[in-house]
Length: 82
Image (cartoon, rainbow, N blue to C red; front, side, top):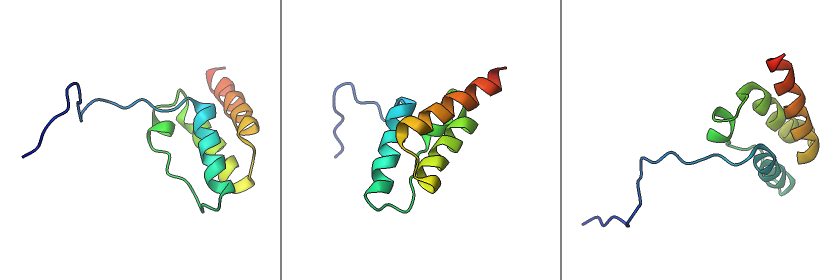
């Protein structure tokens, strides 16, 4: 028997983390020894997925701090809008 919790909807779309929070989470994982990160919706639901994947790549491959990676994300996002 499966019981449902009131208000629980397994098909409800989970919201991604704000970009800086997602980059901070990725940084902490890499800093603690992870070989990589799995970001899923934090990339694909971002305002600019291409800029976000590049910012995450900077954290993972270049060990950029989250604040610097977020600046990179904002710069890349601004270029896409121009």
